[in-house]
Amino acid sequence: MSTPLDILVSVFGYHAFRSQQAAIIDHVVGGGDALVIMPTGGGKSLCYQVPALVRGGVGVVVSPLIALMDDQVAALRELGVAAAALHSGLPAGEAAAIERELLAGRLKVVYMAPERLVGERTLELLSRVPLALIAIDEAHCVSQWGHDFRPEYLGLGVLGERFPGVPRLALTATADGPTQRDIVSRLRLADAALFTASFDRPNIRYHIRQGEGLREQLLAFLDAHHRTDSGIVYCPTRRRVEETAEWLARHGRPSLIYHAGLPADTRTANQRRFLREDGLTMVATVAFGMGIDKPDVRFVAHLGLPKNIEGYYQETGRAGRDGLPANAWLGYSLADVVGTRQLLAASDAPEERRRVEQAKFSALLGLAESTGCRRQALLAYFGEQLPAPCGNCDNCLDPPATFDATEAAQLALSCVYRTGQRFGVGYLIEVLRGGDDPRIASLGHDRLALFGRGQERSAAQWRSLFRQLAARGLVSVDIDGHGGLRLTDAARPVLRGEQRLHLREENGTRERRRRKGGATPVLASAEQALFEALRAERRRLADAHGVPAYVIFHDATLAQMAAERPRTLAELAQINGVGAAKLERYGAEFLAVIARAE
Image (cartoon, rainbow, N blue to C red; front, side):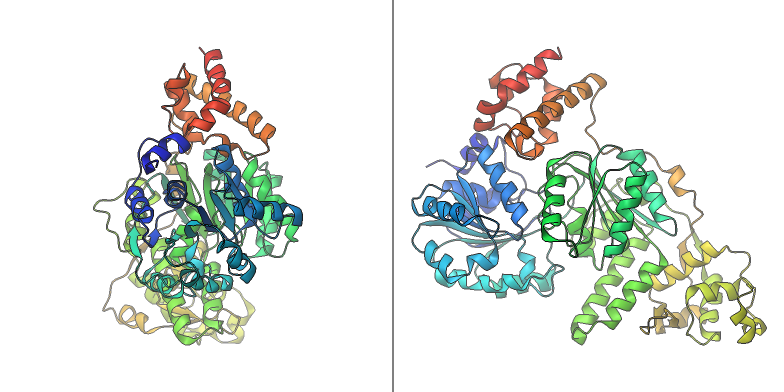
């Protein structure tokens, strides 16, 4: 029997396991169940693909999306692995043919959606074939505490009873304590070993921007760092998705849209285009992205706030899966803070769940408003300590200025209180700056002692201050839909002078001072020219085979080819990502490109 390392080298073209892959694979090959928490891009798929090829029988993989299943099957077939997907998008004849292949023992890996797998007909079918393992990908979907709950995952707990002795793996990139316990309980994995890899993605550079003009800020960032790269822009609403995609397209960035309100065939077509073509920007709600297996996404941006750190981490983790540099950019305003607070407060979820969601959103705001290392704060949320600042986030590269905001905050909080705790930020700023809003005189607010006392600060600076007060929980937002601010108990020590308050000073110059953050392979000019030639050959072969370009080779593999310039098939076989099947199928073409560059 081949060993896991034999399979890793001969099939996948890698020469060593990463992180805990070897331990996980050995455990599963030995018949053990496992809960695997490993960041996106950390190599989760190898944790079930390698054991499926080592053990006898077929590996069954639960996957939530048809497009993802099809692309993973295409990738395995390019590696010479007999793989297939059974899903609702198949013609009846093709599904029947796959079932015959399965019964005949000619498949090593088969992908299924959760609802299909737990159907009685499928369970009976699988009972007639030897199973190597059952892998449940995106396992956080089973938990109502997770950020992507899917009811169809709830039926998967039956698999342990129906297939005793078959090792089961539950895999996810993010799961806090309650979500982990939910996964174990609902999937009946009480005896599963827990494997938790580091959550750190050192190749991702985190950038967070606050304030106004966020689309313009994002465009400037993309033009500076990602002019021709593939990436994702997340927006909180369908309307903002469509408006942002149209706006980006008008400014020269080819963009697609994806949200739940689109026809299913449009969503599928746009997802396939994004996976298969280079240089596209997908503008989407969070309906897009679960399990997206495109390794060369060079940036993920958020125009608006996610609801929790788990979602933010999962979404930003779709950048740089190949290990090359990538950027995660987040821009938000006070309106985003207010809007999300209102949505969470108005939720009809049980009180306990509302409290949990509010706490998670507060943790996200803490990360967003932090003046320290973003990576340290992000990892600390998942219980992991980074001993020193990372040097690869905006706050490390360009530390923000802070100021003693105690007096300004006292003035702002007093304005909230003196005007009756029922007005939004715009009106409060008018009062502080001595504006001429007709409501001010009619309500007598021009006779307040604080009227006009805030003229030395601009409206933008006051918005920043109110945003930070909301983020720190000193003010809350009414849920009546008008966005009125109220003081919280946390405001009292500040108002009484018992607590000093230091906040971020935003003067609009930070982006201009920022050092440039590249997100492409760092190559010499001659190597870069060869890298582009190799990418062109990859595109030609991908088009000919009808698969995404990354299925042929990842960017990281091409970059290593460009740097090392192998001259023989034996030398090419030493490049990471060049397995036996791909060496035989494509080796001569890529060696020819390298030879022409000599």
